[in-house]
Amino acid sequence: MKHVFLTGVPGVGKTTLVKKVCEAMASAGVSVSGFYTEEVRERGRRAGFDVVTLTGDRGRLSRLRYCPSISHCSCVLVLSHPLKHTHSLSLFDPSTESAAGGREYRVGQYVVDLQSFENLALPLFRNMCEGRGRVFVIDEIGKMELFSQAFIRAVRQTLDGSSCSILGTIPVPKGKALALVEEVRSRQDVKIFMVTKENRDTIFDDIVSAVQECLK
Image (tube, rainbow, N blue to C red):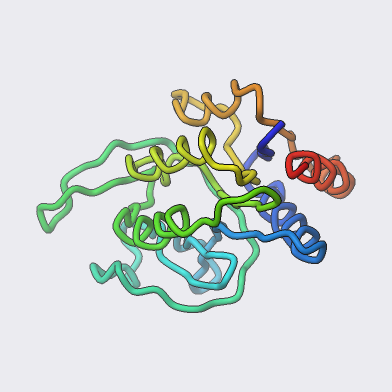
């Protein structure tokens, strides 16, 4: 076993568990890097999702198509403290043409800011330190992230060639299968935990033990 992934319905607590496991690993002296996907709320409602690194850098992943805060300046990263994560997997909508004439990537009512996501996430893979005893967080491998072909290649390379162990999240199967997600599910070197409301408060120790086993 080399990698550990959590799966479960949106909002069940996958990211919360990942964060707790990362804290436990860091406390034990394990090098941990990577990113989370977190909900963004405006005026009490969900406006989209951001990608946040373990060091606090933040970049836009998606926003509601009609959200007034959306801008075309997608390269700006800001520092932030992690927020509670809930992730909605809406109906998949292939890219369409935006009003500006450029390609628009959409998942349901959300427009994916592919450039912002890649600007933040891809350098994490390039800068990832090699060596045993290291954990790389990928939260998550979902529909929005999978618009990026460069991200797909980076994940596959990390799964196959890196000596780091991945602690990641993947969505439950729904609708059209996601090729990379199914690849992860079928790998012999991956341990998958199904997180539910019934076990999310008791499964933590099992996940920590699995990650520790991967690092041996």
